[in-house]
Length: 232
Image (cartoon, rainbow, N blue to C red; front, side, top):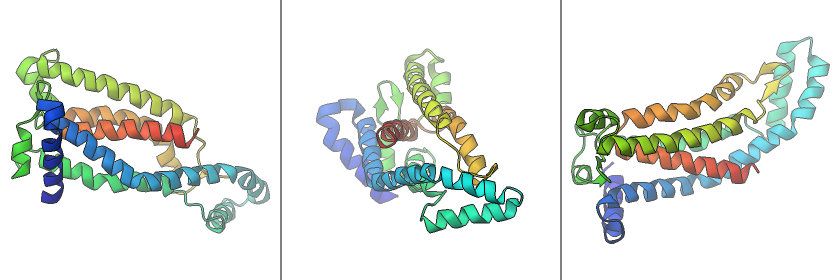
């Protein structure tokens, strides 16, 4: 954790002349962009996988007609088809899983009880009037929902809600991976829940330290733009 903490602190120092008091917040946004840039090749691969799964739908429909009376045989045939075409139903999950370590590093880094070294220095920074180490609950106690820090959160919530709505609409248009009326084991249920997961970001932003919330918001925005480009 100390290595990444030092990286964020160094980025904040570099951005200080340009961003002033918001240099740490800008460093987190830049750090997030770097993380997303590293996993972008996997996101491109996931997009290709989704297009490949969509292309398989006519062949899956043919298997459904052939094995419709035997669900187990149909499911096995569809899984064999995915394996033969080297298409993984889970490929789209990998980019998100690889981002989790960076999120937890920022969470621990800006949690007052565990922050040390660079973390303590970064906790002194603000995004406008909201301390990076505070949560929405702290802003409510300090000045209420429309206080100085509260207004910062209201703007962030508005951004998250707009991005979540955009992601929700796109996810609803994404075809589910199916096997003759039955979902690919475990994947169908996940795919059905994914459109609503976008709005869970609102809860995340409300309960984690502001620094981690900035990571979540930046990453979510990147994802929305990335999907729009890769799946156009």
